[in-house]
Image 1 (spheres, rainbow, N blue to C red):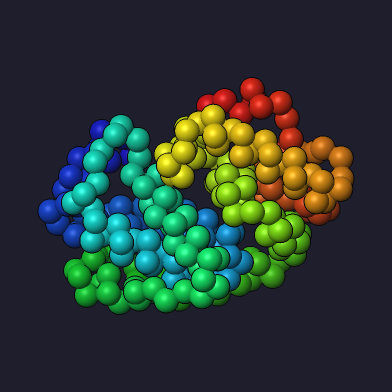
Image 2: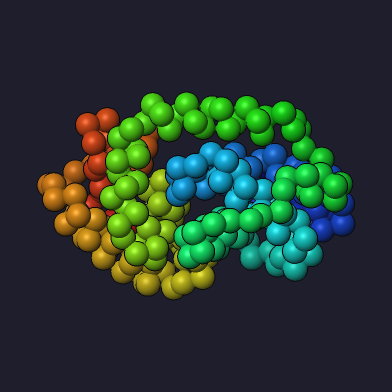
Length: 217
């Protein structure tokens, strides 16, 4: 979907929950996978994703189109919810049922149960990812966020700046410092991340470290 069509869809979603359901169908998988990578807990990831779209639904009328995909707004809400979880050590979201009670229509509600099973199997297979996540968890949240968004979600610096509400220069600085600290943490030579996981290889954790000018959009 190009940006002009998405812009029209967003405006329609402000008046009719059916159209918000189309946005939900399109971006739910990406937001769920992002939350799963950050938490390594399928049920918690589903709760945070549900809360993300619940808050997006009740606030969609406040959303102002700025020429970029609304997905950045969804990532921003999800990131804030993840911060709440890490800060409090617990999470009490609204349930998915609240979304449906408000008239949200989605393609297939059955996939919510199926995705939990699939996510658990994926996490079980990717022990290397869990090892890398444990190392990332030792970093302050501000570094975790930029590293996950850059390598786990393949977001551009400008997108990360929008999601986190920071200047691009600040994002680059956080990314550089975070990778430097992580490299010290894993105590291994500079290497490339795998295309599949973004931040890990099948042999073990691997973090991309390269000159900062190469992080330009």
